[in-house]
Image (cartoon, rainbow, N blue to C red):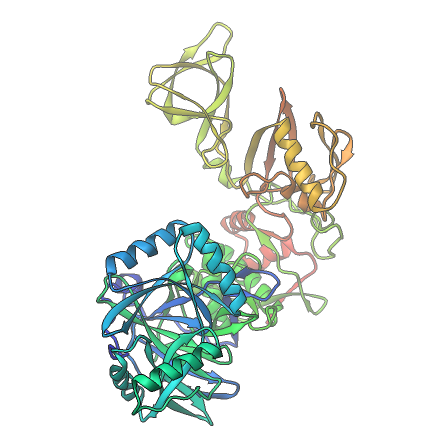
Length: 637
């Protein structure tokens, strides 16, 4: 077996180009705990079987159980993988690297997560394609059956039961002893065990799914290796050191398989300015340290760092660098207020890195102006009558912010509708033409794909398509609107109207056929166990609006559509997982179809980010901006 201090890939996930040799600016404040992967049964729920961490400067790993912790021996790793030591599947086991890679690719194509583990069995190097992580044998066995049906292979359930073959003075000594078992048909692993406030080093054998199979293994090994003594390991807090392939077969990384009763704390080896990357989080890089644990039965990853440094990553994720400094400072105060309002929401973390609380993409979204905005507002939060406000923000109010009754169904004393200068995105949006086609239909085409060539006798403008295979769509945009037809260069069209491409201020959705609208509404009614709409929808009307003009109530065929709150009307008309951008919309029936046209992007309650930008560009400072959108509040430390 290779010694556990392994050579790291030169093509690590984090490169000097990523870091640019920059030492991150430091901010001193209390720490905040951000869940990158967690499933606590509430809020954000997202987990993975294993996590790959990378740090250009190397990583220090600490094994912790309760209040006891010990640093693991320095391995100088720049990349390592981590998982909970529990049940998993070995889908294929082979000395043939190409076959292992083929199986791994097959699994990936079928959306089954997998890694390739390397070990010594029977005197040769063997590759194991490993998939999944399960906290019970039954869960693993059920998934093995599912995977067998999907792939035609025969996954084997492996587990956390092993035999111990001795204790050693160092982890390296344990790894060296593993060579004595290279000819066995079972894997041998060096292990660090936390016992009585100190680390013990051991050699463990096997990945058995039950104590019964461990007993059979003991009998077999005792016969094969009579000079060795084998026993079941004693210790709840441990980490097993395995090896995974990371690229080519000769390039491996350490995989830390830690017990559910333990935690691992991972920090950059650099004294200052170290960063950690998370491959499974789109390769993002982060300040602070990472904590890995088994929480609620799942591998959980928490990024712990100073609050103000966390805000460097949040503000740059929620608002773009290059925006006016006063707008960025507005966002900094909003994000800080929101962050401190959460306290251990997930039991193991204060909040997540997602839009469930607020988006946090880490160090990669930092910039000098963002850091300056955070630093110049350090510690400041928004209060109303001495208490933190509900910090709310969104992209665009569509010209006027919402009243609390229009979003939640109840008023909020410090949030009343105000005018918001939000039309900036529309002013810079690409122009589209609504055009009449020769077959009598109409659609939308980008203005840069046509050239105008005069007007007809009726005054309508005429134009000619100038690019082959120009798409004519059902609406002014490429993301939500389907291709209606394709026109060749030289085709003549009549321009009926010109509109801005869908943007954060103005948008359209549809047309949706009556049948599509019926299906959307009835799917919504089913979610609320409410009566379905009888027949196909013929009429769809807004029957009540709030103070800012947002939809409060709708009827289809005269029947009220059921929603949990007024803002939930956006989710009724769900298409490909996307809701309507806002409830500030009109509905028009065009033939047998329905078209939604609206303004605004988001719930509309609190601060409009585009409105804040416009105010900052007009000379307002961040406190004036906040007190425009929030009435009667204080900005204080």
